[in-house]
Length: 402
Length: 66
Image 1 (cartoon, chains in turn yellow, orange):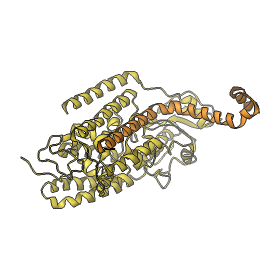
Image 2 (tube, chains in turn green, orange):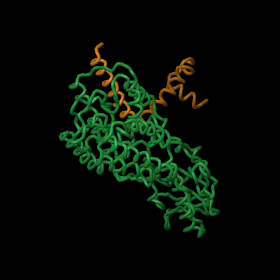
Image 3 (cartoon, chains in turn green, cyan):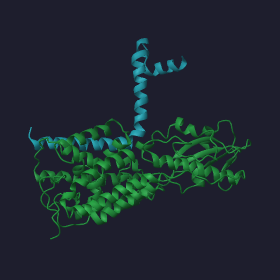
């Protein structure tokens, strides 16, 4: 385990340093896109504060990143080229750059979706599902998009036209992060309670089912290795849900190891429920099983190198739960989802054991904890004294300290 | 087939799939548009232009003229 930790840590450092030199921030040619958002209008050179392009007809165009750089989606800012008229109406919009996960935002990039913002007054609240169509499974990104448009256009209108625009904004979706926090708290409390009494283990099943429904289907935000990459690349989100997911996962790693995998992960929960079906499991020797479990660390090292060298987190996305819960993927990713789910009938938690990058990540950061001897119904099929990185703290076998 | 052989086969198959997915993520946006465009042109050639006795290149020129 020590060697794996050293290997992964060195991969992060080397890839991050090389990526910094190999991938300098590219400059966007905004002028090229001005003709797309306002075809018949001639704009001046970029000037003023905030920087903008002014036209004779009074239309102003600007890069939203120049105005509101602090508003971020799931993976940094969503840079837009926006044009507004002197009456405070949005007349043109184009996404210049974003680093969001494609699975969630493919619909947001379409011209017909962006076109729905055209003709809207900048005084509107831009509330998701009221003023603006929401995209299910991409709440954080759409919220960031709407907020970027609302705030940047109001600031620009106020500075360029001297308009008095109310600073009233859209309400926050507090129910989302609160529901994640509740399910996390439930899991953490029952994790400690089930270390004292096995009779409460039924609560874990309820927690897993709630994880599928809330974290998977409702929030569509399972913890992903892409969260970690965005953090390493210094692209944190301004979404409270994102911060709650990151903070709770790291807290759980400190106090309860791979609690996320064993109690919260919706894909792990589905895998475990499938694995409990009364089908004869394959008998795989411990040595073979041990050798193949290293595969997930190798894959993690590979995607760390790919992502940090290219500075593109979406390049490293092969996670089945992203495909499954975003309801979007290509033939290859859906095939992987299908195989890894069906495989649970023969090998319990197949994905978690051999392929999951989150399992590898949480495994290498887990602390040693005594009292997990493992037994025949271990959901991970662990051997009697498993490496700490393989234990998902389900507490079925927990025997206390000593 | 023994259980261990089936397991190895499954593990290798999923590993190949993961490698293909990663390759698609990296190279897809560069090559897929080119490949898609070529296939579209090729299919159009095979179905329509080749019957007129023209080469693919000449056929494309002829299509543009038309």
